[in-house]
Length: 310
Image 1 (cartoon, helix red, strand yellow):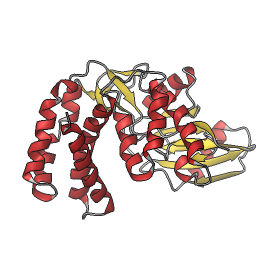
Image 2 (cartoon, helix red, strand yellow):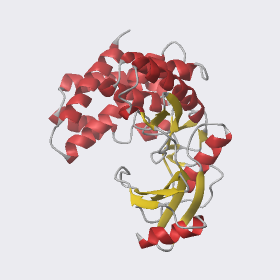
Image 3 (cartoon, helix red, strand yellow):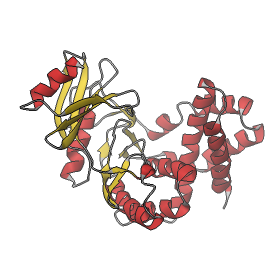
Image 4 (cartoon, helix red, strand yellow):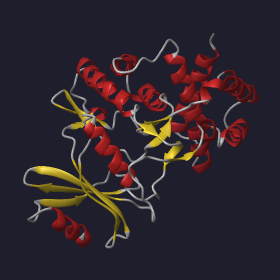
């Protein structure tokens, strides 16, 4: 904690009211700081040689576009004390809609409508390349990802994942059907320009206060994808936590900014399938089957049916 206090002393003119480690941070170490009635968050990247620089760029660009995301108030590509990259941001006030149990469905729908509008703008930011954003580059005025094509990114593990799932989770017929769906939608893998994806867009990262939308947090999973990735990720989470009406509210907001075309639902189902195959194979390879893998299997079969419908 002394290292955190040293960094905090560089940012604030006097001692803050409190500093505490936040449990919800995934692999990133997160500390909550309260100073003069305001809350800030210090994040420490766990990986050596990686930098918050791309996230700083994303936050700055989105705020310039009037998107409600945290403001970065301090950043070091490499901090000597932690020997890692660090970043401090303001908070997005309120609580995530995943915890907003006192709100009516109508109020949450309104919040999601606003979030959909902002997500469409987030996805309009262009990326050089596809896949995970590179965090090892000094140049930060542009955002770069790992793969030259979307096809290479989404199909990196397709064959091995499908082979594993056909041995452990799905029938040979289902594996054949998945390959057929991929072939039928092959042209959708020819994406010319990568779009910025939040990467983990869902109810836990959409915030509200007193029933009003306040913003989106946590850009730690950013990547270059097609426009459908975040919508499909939300779709998968919505199937687990939210009603179809709430998913529709998000999409309606999105469509006020960007036209999605007549095949939007099919695009979302197809991208969801690509995501599910990877997620299900990874989960089963790491741990025994559980409620989550069962849910993914159910969604795989549902989206497979959707994609096979003419």
